[in-house]
Amino acid sequence: MLDNTDILILDELSKNSRITMKELGEKVHLTGPATSARVAKLEDRGVIEGYTIKVNQVKLGFYIHAYLTIITQSTNHQPYLSFLKTQEQYLIHNYKISGDGCYLLECKFPSNERMSEFLEGLNKHANYKLSIVIDK
Image 1 (cartoon, rainbow, N blue to C red):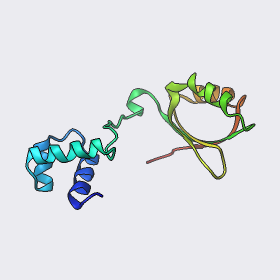
Image 2 (image 1 turned 135 degrees about the vertical axis):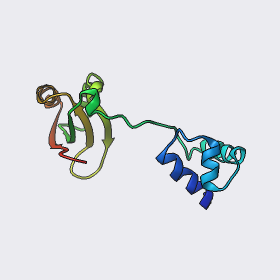
Image 3 (image 1 turned 120 degrees about the horizontal axis):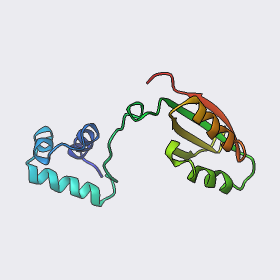
Image 4 (image 1 turned 90 degrees about the vertical axis):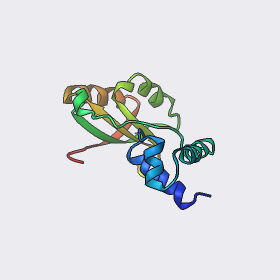
């Protein structure tokens, strides 16, 4: 069970995972060592699975952010999944879902031309519905 201090720690780490244990302790009213022990316990229990960074895809040259609802053409999804392995530079997330499709694919593309090439290749393995992010 998580207590209020654990929840505060998780909230602060989700805002800034690079915060020092001393600074985090001050925010949750614990000493640095006590905070470090709490964080280690959360990691050991699998509550904290890892730390990450948020990357600005536009600054890396990926100007198109798209979501695709994937509808595979058969119950054998391996051709689709194999295709994705060849296209990893464009993939953000691939979620297996229930509902209108089989997968929800989040992608990034540097141009409409690259997206079109990707979609042509994808169409050999699955049908899709495309949504492009206009603004966050």
